[in-house]
Length: 383
Image (tube, rainbow, N blue to C red):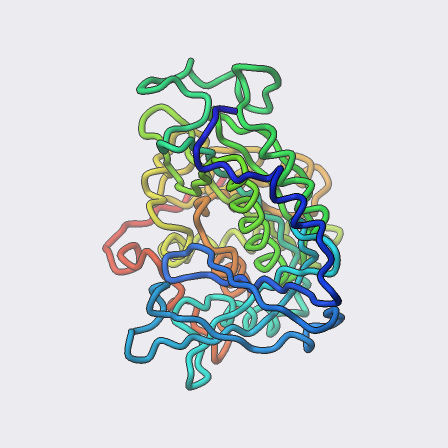
């Protein structure tokens, strides 16, 4: 990779990482900030963490993360899951947290809270989710790695699942991230180079219910941390390069015990009917700037039109060919943008398929509210 003045000095760091910790444990608390980004801070623990209850509540300055005003800035961190730390090794851990205000109410950007209520209420459905996270790696100047400076590479075609110099870039980052996820216990199920050069994808799942969101956010955190060491930037922008280049999505694979059962295609078709009736609501929580990606080109459906079909990557929802042949399985919602929140995605899908839940308001999840408030005309097309 190209040299960079911001690459971490990992060779020097190693001798310090190998120092004994004298019985202490480092817990790195991770949370989602007010701009759909990630933050973290570390705490020293006196003993090994063996259960979630061993982790105490903590707090941070929400006025510095866009989550609270300066005159009431304390936001509280409540651990919800923890994972082995692939950077510090040993008994050190990375902790996923929810955010709460001092009065005990969820922070405005705590999308996990309502999604967990919805998924728990509909636990009998036995949801399994698998999300395909696309992303683009940029150099220190914000240009995709491997692209000519102030220019463009050859047109798309040889890059998807490519092998060889000039076809793929930054494989070292991808490999390091893959191993870090496996070490951390993330259910990462694969990775591949994507259609646009310097764009990659990794998949997490299948995972039940709320755990998918926890794991995907930690996988994103690990990706940012790995990229730091190589001097690269990670962007989840759904259309990082305008023009005739593929955007980046977060394709969401969904199944329930009914869709997985014999004859489950009937349950999938019923789900399509319900999804088609809430196009605006889904698009409102499926990521910011998604309209730049969903143009009806580059393997996307139109932003304001719901379609579904077998093996059709140009539809809103794709039914895999094998699922149609088996008459059971899962469906792939191709609408979410790469920067969408997995809690929002899984929460609204469960709500649409099985009904709203008292005490949980998915509508407040909107980070693109104009899509709901506009007079967008939604067309529905069946195969």
